[in-house]
Structures are given as structure tokens and as C-alpha cells.
Length: 157
Image (tube, rainbow, N blue to C red; front, side):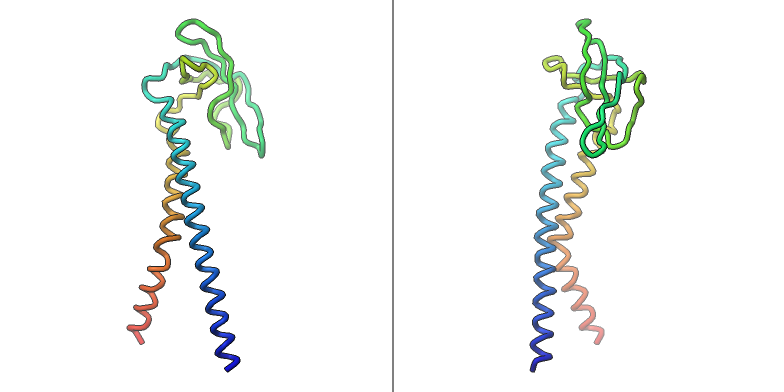
């Protein structure tokens, strides 16, 4: 009787861990999707109609946990000289100080500018979306796969 009771307790413990893992995966997935949406709005604001200027990377600033931002110097279409930090952080340095770059900027807010790297600008939002969908998929569909696997094992016996 005691052995049976212990095995039931072990099953319940494992089930709780699985349930908590599913909940954590779903919450993490939703957080990744929210970050992907936020980053998508940021990136889309530098869409095709944002003006492009030739500029230089005047420096690299180190931030929290080693994350870096390029300091950009460029001249707008109106001839105004601007020096501002890149709107997006660089986990690894893409450019060195003194490099000539194309800069996309908002004419209404000259402090909002980024280095024009084309379609690669969408890499970070896409990574967050894929990570979010993966976590959600694991959190939602993994129990169904486990039940399917158990039913196959039962049929083989």
C-alpha cells in the first residue's frame, strides 16, 4: 500500500512540474511575441519612406551588460548636422568607429535614427516571433504529443 501511495505521489509531482513547465512556456512565448510586436513597430517606423542620409559612426557606447550602441553623425536633407545614438542596440558590434554608413532617420524626430542595414533590420523581431511561437507550441501541444506517444506504446503492448 505504501509503495502504491509513493508512486501516486511521484506521478502527481511529475504532473505538477509538467503543468508548471507548460504555463512557464506559454508565458514566455507570450512575452516573446509581445517583444516581437514592439520591435516590429519600431522597425516599421524606419520603413521605405524614411529619409536616408550618408553618415559616419562617430563612436560606440557601451551600455548595460556589454550591449553597445553606435553614435551616428549625419547631415539631414535640410542640411542640419545631427549626432545621435542608434535607435537599436548592437549585441555584437556591426560597425567600427569611423565607418561610413547609410542612416535612416525620422524628419520629425532627428534623435530617432538607425543604420540602414536593409532587410536585416527585421532579424531581431523575427527571432522574437519565432521564439514566441516555439514556446507557445511547446506549452500548448507537448501534452498532446505525450498522450499520442503513450497511446502508441499502449497499442504496441
